Image (tube, rainbow, N blue to C red; front, side):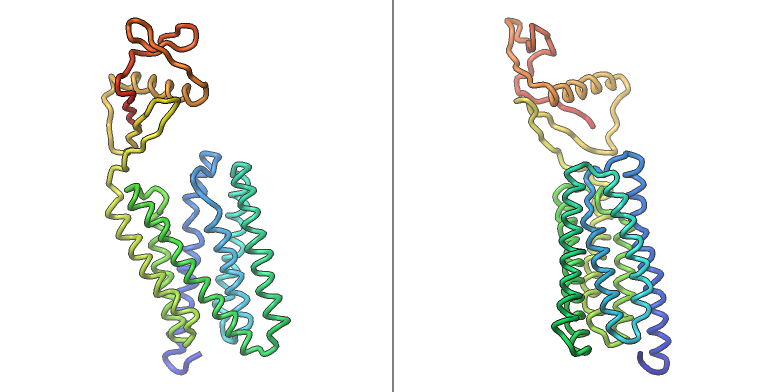
Length: 295
């Protein structure tokens, strides 16, 4: 710890970092409430929570090797319990394929990865100072990788013009978290803590800017082919359809779902109508093979 007023500042930023980090750990709750309501994990993945658990365990190990790092131990211990709860919740509602992939990731990162780090540093590195340095560098590199990971989300937001899978609450919490832990590491002269949070702050601000840029934008048109016909789905939350067209839209959606589940062999009669399965007329033939569906 630093002397004088810097010691008080270090303590203040450490306590603030604990509070903000606790907010970060709780920020996925709206996501899991949505999973609970729909009884499905949908497009969400377990990767952030497995990585979060691995990161918390890694920082606890680093703090145990390093003196005067109790504030790192407290918040990351809480983080381990919360991330474990999220992972168990995800596994309960995830489909079989996603569940198997998640269990493989847990085995690779938590059991094998973390186990190797602890085992190799304990048995091959006998000097405590060198052990702290090595584990500190591992924490630094991994933290940088974690902060670079949101680039994939940023790319998806720019490409689809949709912020559905980039919650603003999480972006704000991560930005505040990066600021507090940067100053805590700086005042402790621990650059393994300070340096990664510079990158974390940068990407956090970028995500917040993208959210406000694209939150009211109409998502791009997604084309998908079903049984030889191309259906254009215009996915926009703001589009309103007149009430007298609701039934037509429902009928078209039902037709789309039917075509997804049943192999269709279509032909045309003399009146240019579509004939499917024993002369069942579905609808007039559309020359450009395109059906407009308002979602």
